[in-house]
Length: 207
Image (cartoon, rainbow, N blue to C red; front, side, top):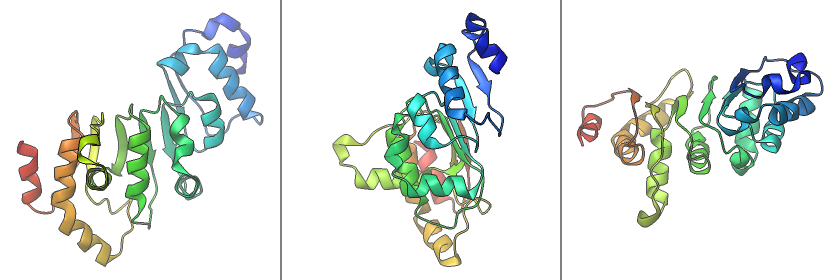
């Protein structure tokens, strides 16, 4: 990659790169060079970032289109830091978390993420239905947004969400409302992975 960057115009038409887990020691300068020498990456392209780059670095250069959290340490940063820190990633289209979370309050973080990033098309296997319900019930009726998600997962994912038995029961009892809100807020869905707890939730998909 360093050789490519040194070649000047040879890499200006590159639209997609996937960064390895281990970047050069001076990774901030490296990413700035990518931002400068590969303009299509920053405008319409894709740069896949895993756990090797801090959010602060990404927000400074504003070139990230896909953000994956693979470890608890990284998700803790996302959860504990102000979610508005991510707002500068205007090109963010895909967001995913690949480890279990015990906190049932994650839906508030996902809701904020949706509101800050209108270009989001996928949240991986992260449940977006609870976040949709939260947005639908906390926003004023005349300001409710429609989001551009095209790939959705609705339901309790036992691998990703480590809820207590009581939390699971409460979730399932509210689930039909979650689906109803999701149908209203995510009209562009093309690929849907939905967990069916009872047939009532499917009625909302007919409209």
